[in-house]
Structures are given as structure tokens and as C-alpha cells.
Length: 319
Image (cartoon, rainbow, N blue to C red; front, side, top):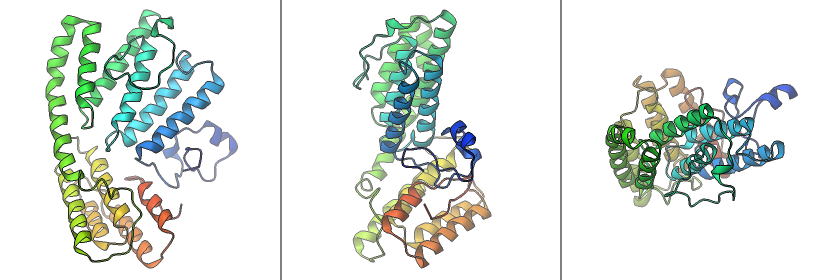
């Protein structure tokens, strides 16, 4: 990834570079993949908003400006909308969509918002209806995602539905209540595994020390991975690998030079159940061998694992 937050694209002409976006990048060779680190995605969203203001008078009114911002938010929540702290991304996304369809989020409007009012929008009924449906779709996605502040999102979703139609809100809320309750329960269970790991997530990897504290931390990471492999969110099999690989990446960033993590990851990939198969398992093993027998700068290798993209490929350890 480049310093400005855009994907690193090799061997592209200037025209292709100018036409490429964060979502179209996977069709090219992405050197370092996509990170799931929330603060980095927040910086990316700030960059997109800044670039949009340079082209348009506002990031809220013009259709082209709004489409670009929605595309950026979708890129962010699709790649980091399920990790610890992802509620900040969803909150920004909901507030942005609310302002562009003329609805004000009363319960979660604690962000730095523009001074303008949604009343300034002159939307035809068809456009407003389409944007309301889009906002409803995002609300329904986030209330089924385990994260912090889920109660606040649920209350805001109920307020939103009742503002549209009191009669229609009752069956919709009843339909999505079980999904919200299940997501809340999964978040509580997940944090039971994550609470002891959060101080270590993101730290620089160190060589094995074979201490009791290290063995205990490694065991806790493996327990967290085992939990994600049970598919507690009841995700489709096509989406489950993303959660499991994120758990392995979190563990590999901390225990980069511990073969246990890489062996466990490679074995899961080769198992055939949601894994990437033998080819991806070999790539995982190759990363392990490269890191253990070709030492490189710690900061570099930590960033490398956090930016690795799966299942399309496991990227090279060079950044």
C-alpha cells in the first residue's frame, strides 16, 4: 500500500493508475493486500473526503461525490467491518448516509458533522426512496455484526424505521431482532477470548523465549482461532474464511517466528473445509520458512502479515 493510502499497483500505465480505485485494485497485482486495521481505514476515508472536496463543493450533494464516498465506505467495512473497534467505521458510514437522504441520527450523532442540515437537500422522491433503502440495508447489515455499541445502533435503527412508517417498522424490527440478539451474544463470547489478547495485538514480533507467559498467550490465541472456526456468527461458508484468517493474522503478527501458528494455519488451509486448499497452505508454509530463515526488520515483517490478502494469494513478505 502506498503512503497516501492507495493500493500499490505494479506495471500499470498512467491511465490505468488514474482510473483505478480501492475496489478495482484486486484485478491488478496488489503488492501488500488490504489491511483490516481500523485507524488506517479511517485515514483512507479522510483522504477520499479531502480529494472529493477538491473536485466538488461538498461531499454530500453531488451524485458523483456521494457515489465515491459510498464506494470508499463499502471498501472499509468490507475489509475491516468485523474487527475489534469496527463500530467507528459503521458509525461514520451510517451518519454519512443519513445526511445524504435527509435523516438525522439522533442516538449516534456524536461525530464531527457538518453545520449544514439535511433540509438543504433537494431530492426528488425516487432518489430519496433509493437512498432510504440503501440506509436501511446498511442498518440491517450492521445490527447483525458483532461489535461495540450494538445497542445504540439497534435503537437508532428502530427510530429510523418508525420515522419511515410506524406500521411497517413493527414487522421489520421483529424480523431482525433475533439477528441483533445473536450478534450481541457472539460479541460477548468473542470478547471473552479477546480481552486477554488485546494488549498484545499489533505489537512487534519477537523471537521465541519459551517462557510460561509466552506459552499462555500463544494458547489463548489458538483458543480464539478455534472459536472462530466454529462459525459462531453462522456465516455462509463463502464468508467464514475471512473471519478465520483474520484470527490467524492477529496471532501471526505477534508470534511471527513461532512455527506453531504457521503450521496450524497451513493445516487449516489444506483441510478443505473453507480453507484455500493445498496451494494456499503451501504459500502459508513458504511465508513461515522465509521469515525464520531470512531475518528482516521487525517492523517490516509485522506490517507484512497485517497487510496479507487471502484467499486470492498470500503476498510476498517484501513490502
